[in-house]
Image 1 (spheres, one colour):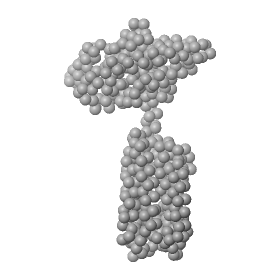
Image 2 (tube, rainbow, N blue to C red; image 1 turned 30 degrees about the vertical axis):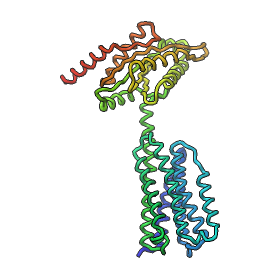
Image 3 (cartoon, rainbow, N blue to C red; image 1 turned 180 degrees about the vertical axis):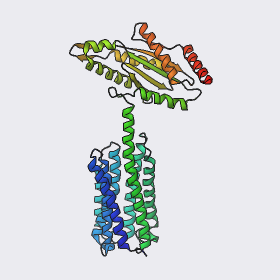
Image 4 (tube, rainbow, N blue to C red; image 1 turned 180 degrees about the horizontal axis):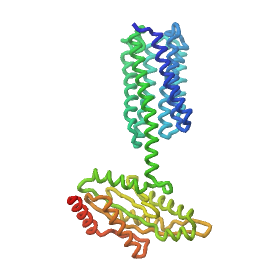
Length: 398
C-alpha cells in the first residue's frame, strides 16, 4: 500500500525542484527567456498537486477550479517556451482564454461534482497544448538539433496518455479515472507524469546546449564581415560532397574576384572597402537560391557552389551577380566608389571533386581579368576532365 499524501508531497517536491533548476539557469543567462517559461510551469504543476492534499478535495471548488487551472497553465507555458525558443512571439491569449473558460465552466451548477466531465475536459486541454508543442518542434526542424525529435516524442507520448485517460476514465481509479482513489494507481500516474517532466527537462537543456554548440561552429565557419561561409567551411563542404557524390550530378562552381579592390582600399579607405565587400555579398545572396552555397575564400575572392545547376543556368546567375554589382555605388568622404567583378565558371554533369572545379574556375577568372575584367569566362571542359583524370591517376599510384 502506498500512502497517497506522501506520494503527493514527494512528486510535488520533485516537480518544484526541477522548475527551480530551470529558473536558476535562467537567472544565470537571462538571454534565454525560454528557460523561464519552462521552469515556471514545472513549479506550477508541482504546486497544483498540493490541492489534492486538501481534505475533501473531491468536492472542493478551490481544489477543482484552481488546481486544474494551474495544470493547464503549466502545459500551456511549455508550448509558449518552445515558441520563444524558436524565435517566435509568445501568445498569451490561448492560455488566458482556456483558463477563463475553465473557471466559467466550474461556475456552472453540477460541473465541479461531475468528475468524468472534469477529467475529459482537462485531458483534452492538455492534448491541445501538447499538439501545439509538437507543431513548434516539427516546424523548426530545419535547425538540426539532435534532441528535437526525442522531445517531440515526449510530447506525443504525454498527449497519448491524456487521450487514453479520457477514454478509460469511467473504468479506472483516480487519478486515471472516476473510481475512488487508490495509492497504487496514484503512484503509477505520478511516476508517469514525473518521468515525462524529467525527460522533457533534460531535453530542454540539451536543445539549448546543442544550439550554442551549433552557433559556435557556425561562427568558426563564417566570415564576420559578409556573413558568408569561409574557406574552412568550403573545405568541410567539399569533403562531405566527395563522400556523397553520385556518378551523374549536375553542378556548377563560380569563382568571383572583385576588380581593382586594392585601388578601392587605397583611394577610398578600408572602411569603404569593407562596405563594398558586404554589398557584394548582399547582391550575391539576392541572386542565388537558398540551396546554393556561398563562400568568401579570403580578401576579395569568393566561391559559390550551385548544386543541380546546368552551365547555362550558372552563366545566368553569374551575369545577374555581375550586372547587379556593377550598379552598386558606395558613398565615401573621397567620393562615390564603384567597381566590377570578374567571374570564372566550372560546370560538370558527373562527379568531380570540388577542389578540381575550384582550380578550373580559378583559372577561368584569371582569364576573365586578362581579357579586361568585368566579364564571365567558362573553364574549358577538356581542362576540367584532364585535371580529374590526372587526380584519379595520382590516387591509383598512391
